[in-house]
Length: 217
Image (tube, rainbow, N blue to C red):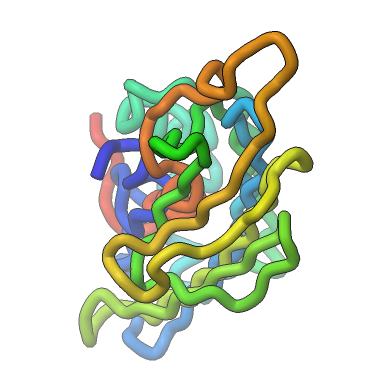
């Protein structure tokens, strides 16, 4: 699994957003909602919204919420081989929720048949799809002392996407596959960077910056 896929799908990617939340109780539930919008060139924007318990919120604010520059620094260090773009963080102390937006450049894996492929971990279950819009969900608990993490991902494929389908669902090879008609005057391969299965992992990987580990110095 490359670093981009870890960022998309991993629960723990960089220091700080660990689901084994410092001071959290096993009964706590962490709700994380993510939306990923992809264009035909493989570039995208990720929006992550999470809601925390009182104890989780206190830890997260001390570590990152009141220091967004530290959060952005740690993300860029951990993902140094990715091209990240704009970053924005907004938080609501009353609701104990925050929204993070990140833009990046990249691209789904280009298949030998000319289609595009986004690897999806087998524990992510498809909730619904309507052509371009796909929704996945996973509920996990790292161990009996960790909080329950409920993660929902909305993936919006490019407007040009055709024949979207989920290949080999429920297996280690589960993947969201779609086709993009070749652009006039250029080959389809030029639209993608071939960085591998990268979309949904980026969305989930942002959860790696929830409270827990101390940031690197």
